[in-house]
Length: 208
Image (cartoon, rainbow, N blue to C red; front, side):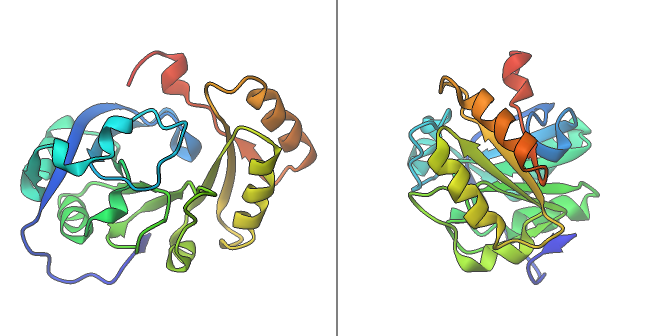
């Protein structure tokens, strides 16, 4: 388990882009049934982002943490994934505390570019070169997942891998629309077996 200090949470609303039940398509929990809570707001600005509509939090309705927990419980998932956007732009402690009080394992997907808040069972860090993570995120990281479009991303991946715990799982994920990224990752993993390949299986299955 990885978490920040737990205090009594206060009622909190969050800008919610969408919630939906599907499978986790990436990383160590690929294929696992999941309920996704996608929060609005992101200032990282990845050129390859497939959810650019999430960037402006003002475009999305506010939902209470309690309502999000209710919907998550009703979906009966194996895990709940808090994602974005960049979810760490918000104080995640009230939401994650309530989810875990309801008996749901809670996962975070983040670039790590903002201060760490919340209580999680699993933290996926996907760092970006153009807005690097804050230092406090690294002790919490369960898996490091670096999106690879070119060789410079492999260099960045190694730099970031040097900052996480030795038990952290290391993943390289080909950038979906970049020709040759799959072969680049495949060849690198064969030569560097500490890394694993992460594929976006939900896109292959054509599901959310």
